[in-house]
Image (tube, rainbow, N blue to C red; front, side, top):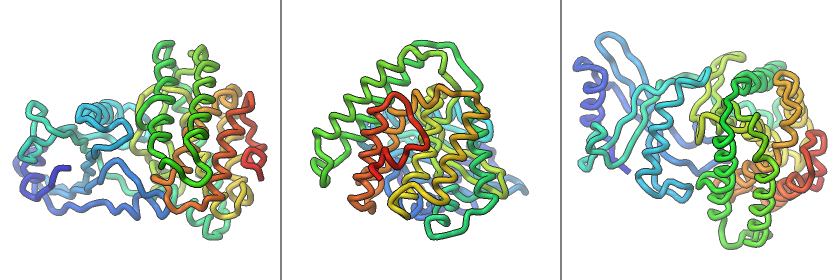
Length: 362
């Protein structure tokens, strides 16, 4: 990965924002604070830049992407992701804005795209605390507050709002289902990242899940009317609450359009994960928030069909949170519950939110 220096960063900022820019500081955004105690793996290391342009001070976040096994092996893979980020971030309500997209040349200078060797995206800085901080407080025995419920409601309504924007493109809906199965960041990329054996998790088990997900792709591929504006990676680390129910979202991923169930499952799997860690089942505050989210979303969106499309997306998100690479500190019992959840959800015709514990074998 490129090495950042004050000289190269200031030269880039002056080129982008004018000759009067002065770089005041730059620092890596800590993995512990940005990713939480459970999540360890990430695609890159964001750097916060603070600079002054004439009399105005502002901050921005410089993001890169490292080579890796999730469809990021080639420079062109990483360039595609950065170019898409820059193009799409500004079109999603509440998403932080991308200020620029650029590249590093062979001398590790931030420069024009003509001499590109690696790409970066520069996003605006926004204050706020990750939504995971709220969930972590509940994991530690915190009392469920009125604000916790309000935040769950506002997130569910936000998804209903963005999903209300539809697009008629049957081929694109089918593509997004293909990517759910075969994209390097999705199901097959995840199954390939598992160790040869991890306790009960064998190659045969992972292959069986892949096959079941592909059968679901064939069930869903004609539901092209469901193609909607999506975030694409709507998990708690990508939601920043500033105060009360005011929030911003980060790092939308993989596609501007897709299946609404992708966003709904991406968030709600975390209520299940954190409850499994705390209680060994879905119960208490997490059960309340899980059901509140589903009830609010279905009422606000009017989308009763989402329970018929959720299964392969829950499988994808389940493979993420059960992964020994992404979540290395989980017990084997929690991983087993997650895999039971994946297998059972894939084995029924539609998802029932009040049956989560039975899906987990609890």
